[in-house]
Length: 430
Ligand code: CMC
Image (tube, rainbow, N blue to C red; front, side, top):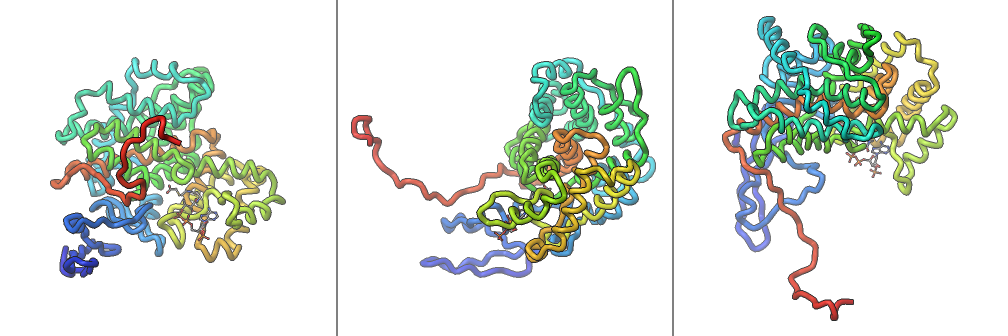
């Protein structure tokens, strides 16, 4: 909705009237589309002040610590919903009724198996390959198998690709773990819930079926819900950017997985565990807190701070509760690594540096602790984030492709390189 304008006076040019667009929640945006005609660009590296698109999926108010999916607060979804229901909500905009829920689950579960030939891809990887490296490869490779869901302009194809991706991610993820430990792949069991089935595929062996502990299943499901979407973060923006060129959904999600891998984004929960191991003992915590505060030291407390949440991360509040439930259930409060984590949380929350800069533990601080307690190896943490975020990526990709004004995303730049010069022959070069 446009009802006001911002006036921009550029040196030597006439004043531009830029429309101010209001959303339903959150800051208004200034539509700067006409700037390029005046041969000017805006400059916002890191996109701190840039809205890259219009979206109806997720809303975050970082100052209030608010996260809404299609209007519903994340705390309520984590408390009353389950992951596949949240998937439905993100994809279709409303919570499903009973019939819709049953039908959706059936449709998704119909696609949990992996093509036999794709299974053979795994033996091409080294056993010590990082599972995220395997995921980048095998998810991209899905496009070589499902030619009947690659037409991005066909709504049915898009829906089929969405179901396939949501259904196959846990199977592919668990396979990447099984491959690394040299155990046979475990087939999905569609009678189980999404989270239960994932734990079964991770930990069952042919000689012994693992019956997942319901408290751990609940915690796993919460991890999936809390990571399902987070508006225009780095990986979602990557998926949108890749998708804007018309690339197929499997390739776009593989691009999202690659972007998620970095320690400043999805790799943070893995980095949290590495940091706790590096700290090694509760007595070393003050030394590491000092390192984190030292401007000349690149060390940061992993699992603290967030680009958007400058109050607290609402996902962290829910995850913290789950974390304590899991540690209680497994009697792990005295485990040395968990003791370091809990003490670090306590000390950092009282430290003036962290208070002033509004650096609170984020969701990944607690999810890393829970995943380790469940027995998930550290290098699988980001894979689990990717599994959960797949639905968010798809919802955004679908929203973008369905938009009437879809066009390739093509940012511009501020060029600071050499001005035009003539080619220098070899004998004249320094
Ligand atoms: N430890 C110590 N100091 C920190 C930390 C930290 N974890 N995070 C930020 N700061 C300081 C930073 O040095 C800067 O100080 P100054 O104002 O003196 O220059 C100030 O706080 C603001 O930081 P920033 O770099 O401008 O914040 P950002 O929005 O660019 O970065 C972040 C956000 C998440 C990348 C960063 O907080 C960080 O590196 N955290 C650790 C990694 C992490 O846990 N990432 C997971 C994020 S949650 C998962 C997800 O949603 O992807």
